[in-house]
Length: 86
Ligand SMILES: [Zn+2]
Image 1: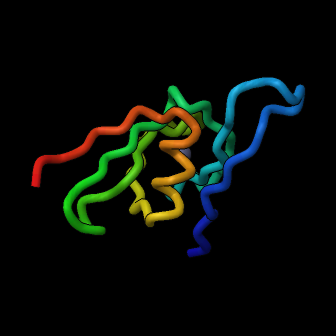
Image 2 (image 1 turned 180 degrees about the vertical axis):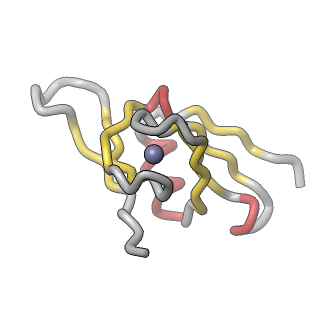
Image 3 (image 1 turned 45 degrees about the vertical axis):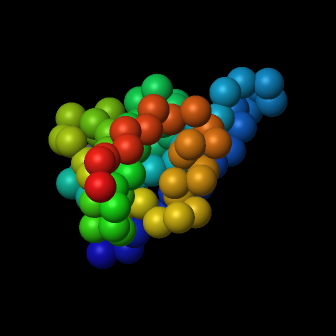
């Protein structure tokens, strides 16, 4: 199954907040999410570092692993971050 890469961009009007393009593995729809619709969890290892959101199309809770670059994108875009205790 192809994985839609997480990307970051600005809203079309230019001055808006960052939006993140993400895909849902359940209904295979891709869509844009505002920072407030995403949650990032950073754990001690890659296995416990992931981002999550609720699919606006099918309502499923989606959780995906977040690499270093994605963590940077999300934190830089104002996504709420939960840092787990080591
Ligand atoms: Zn979905």
